[in-house]
Length: 624
Image 1 (cartoon, rainbow, N blue to C red):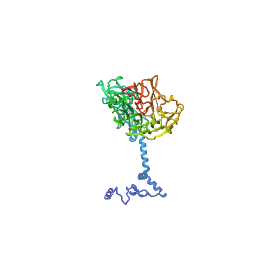
Image 2 (spheres, rainbow, N blue to C red; image 1 turned 135 degrees about the horizontal axis):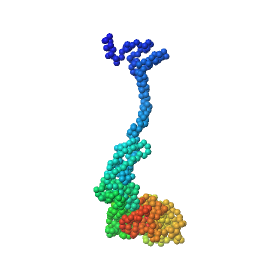
Image 3 (tube, helix red, strand yellow; image 1 turned 90 degrees about the horizontal axis):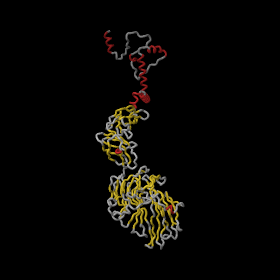
């Protein structure tokens, strides 16, 4: 008996073929329960079916101590069925968990912050002056930014709360907290405590006198930026009464200044910045006519091309392109007249035409970056072609073009027919002029001829005869169509009749139309020289009233003129960018002024103005 019991204890976890009991009598009619039936079902097992006759037996099993095992088996079977459909059950489960976690504030922001970023604006204000602290470093959640001229720094961080630190030289470190919410604009304000002296500074435009925004001031290792009113506060150490500072802004020349270390608003801490760029002009301070360049305040004066002493005081001229990238110089540098190109990018000088004592030049002007001019040759006879030429030079491509030349016919000075050019006008990307015939008296070469109005682009393309004007029978010596520019892009034509009167036409936008409202007085009127702005949207001109000039700024067609100065001693010289006007006084002083006339002109420099003027010239600057 003892041996049997010992063998039975050792095999408690081993299956046997005989049924195991605990010694109690089995209930009548109860089914046999083997160890196999009590064990966990295998996935390949088949559950026995239950018939109506077995219902009583099933109930008796349910009430037995083996019932929990049956329920566990069913739950496990359901689990297998759930995961068998994991393609849709798994996402549902994950989504349910996310919804559950997001519903709890404690876990909502840490989870969303991993993928959801928001902008937080931190405004830093001085604790005493309550003014914006510019150039401060603001850091949170591993990112940092500097405050702008409004004292605001923008950080892109994950949603939720973050510690924030603000640092700047001569300020105590600020530690605070920012919160990036799910919706709306997130903002925070930090109060910075200065450890130095708060110095108020203002910066203005040298020409307009208007406040400049976003000017960067650097001094003693710290920076500040001006606001829309041109104001900024520099916090500086009190160890010195003055501090050297640099002032800079895009589009302006950098400047070094001395700042008085005081908390009071003083004029000595008001500074002016000069617009960037160089102004070119002629000067004979040295005794020769030199080409000079300076800043727009007259500083940093430099000789670009020294005169030789052979320049002609009457004919020397300097005309700048509207963008001030190129300048055309007419000069007798070696005793012979020539045209020179000056490139502002490197101040290089190129002789583009000249070198002959038998050639003289007439400047027309700039059309974009192409310069147009005429050449007259004294060594070409009237009955020969080419006595006069219309030429241009593309400064960008460094290319010279022959646009047109005069023609001739006959055998000598008593037998010739020849053409000549009228005034050449530059109108919106084209050169427009008349080509007129002249003749000896006997024989007369005008019979059957016509004068022509011609249009051509500065690069020599698109040449066309816009309108021909047949020469009336019996005309002797000369038949000339005259051209007068009355608006920036329009000209009048004066055409002679047989009876000594004149007919009039207007040319505009590629077409010619008769004008019965134009008389000799209207044609011969002294029209303003319209100077077109670099952006081609505005024009600048003057009109004489009471023997003094009244200055106007209008649109590109010369219409809608707004008076910006009256009874003035100033005459138009040109534009410098679309923001400033250049004017001349007494033919020897250059000034700059704002385009709206809100401030009196400020003097730039003295200069040399040649005796020769270019009335009607609007394709560049410096011709008046």
